[in-house]
Length: 174
Image (cartoon, rainbow, N blue to C red; front, side):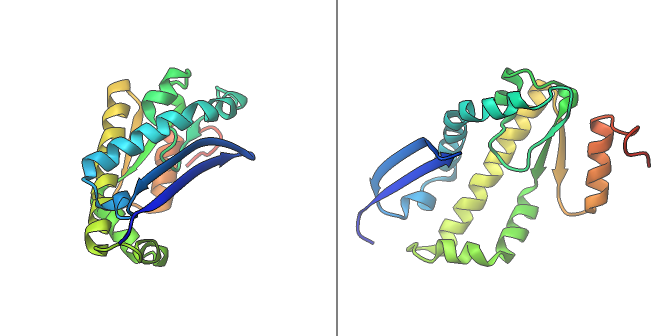
């Protein structure tokens, strides 16, 4: 695979928040070590987070926040005053992540240009596992509630977990 220029831009409400130009092969995205990929992922979210702060401040701080996605890292959320009873960190297990990503058709499309698709997928999943561990460790250190999702519980069980964590039983009685 020849060298190419990779351009990445993150847009938010029409503004470019983060832009990078990287002169490497496409393989660099997933064929680096998972540790390096995880470090890059954490750094990216740390750079983007200030732009999300404005949106978080618009929320009522007395209402819970559930993040479905990686942008709201526990150590960043805690710095803006989101309390322990207003944040639950939902983290997939390695096995759950691999099982579900293996079934998604867009994953194979995303990997179609890599010289070693299997290695790229394995590095991606290992990066995600390291990222999940980083997030879990941050959440535990701060004292945030965590929910490890492994597929053994149904969506309703996970919902009830969040109801209890946010003490919303008055609104959603069992």
